[in-house]
Length: 452
Image 1 (cartoon, helix red, strand yellow):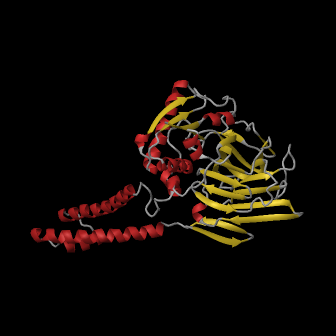
Image 2 (spheres, one colour):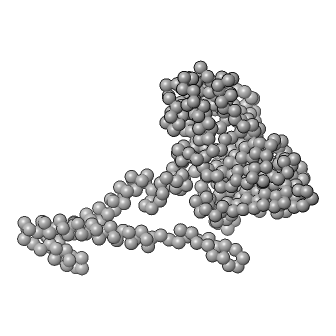
Image 3 (cartoon, rainbow, N blue to C red):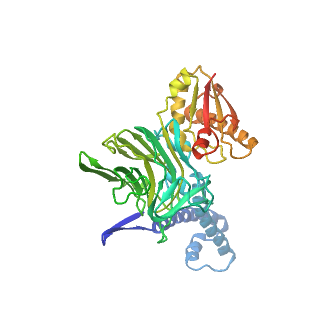
């Protein structure tokens, strides 16, 4: 449970311990077991002609060292163990989680160390763009170096972590880190990245901030609370609450500003937990998703469509960032698959060297399944492809396993008849781009659906 106190111009965040409530629940369950135990002892006392009920009363205040009392000792211990076993069994039934947690929420799964399941994203309607135009997972950077595609007025370095695979850009600064090269973005595009809030200089979660902006200084950074010509700022406060701010410094000669918060505590981020952020831009509209949940939907985030954003940057306090991906073009699933006979998708995600479909793939799989279920007489081949990193044989095997995982999810989660789907993998043998940059490697990592 959380509590917020206003004072001294700020908010204080603290946790209220729930042990008192748990102890009360534990005592009630113990009394129930003792009551049942007394009834059993009364039945036994008929044959033994020993008033074990009275013995039990005395036993609770002063255990005597005799043969009958030793039996009661064992009985009391059994009752206590039974209460403990009850909690263990209940925990096991509910997924080895602490009592009282709602097992239906992916947030609880993340806190317990489990990965969210695909079905937990059943309301996730995000569809990533069709073509990747920017990608960085920092694999081209040496651990300990500043990432090559960025600039900064503070500091950052590439790191690895024992909790999550891959390379991460770690920063803890009051400055910012921005894309050195300007981006060319159309009216409609999607932007995604993974983020882990970490402790800052004060030893606690510091919060973090992401900005999509139209810069003024192309070779440097823009300062101020509303930098550049215009922008959209999304971030997390030090106690976990998400916020946004959209602004335009020159809209009809006047400053335009819009901001908001998400006060649902289920959306609050927590220290050292990984979150997948998805940004969907459609002309003036911006939608923000955190994992499976849409937390902001701003119809006029960019009120002047002629002002195109051209830079992303991360700023304020402390976080680790990876898998930054910008893609353009709305998927045309039906036409590609049914008319052209081939659909290439970049919206089905896997961790590095893994074949388990990540839950943020739900929107893409749902879109494909809808087409397949409407034309039940069409058979499809699913082909997996990888980039050229690693051994050829390992990549070939990985691509086959990934294709098989996609088939399994389409059948299990979306009701597609598995008999209509065949799978294969091509490994790195059919690249669509040179394996020389993060963007080109991302283009080669893909899943194809071919109409048979």
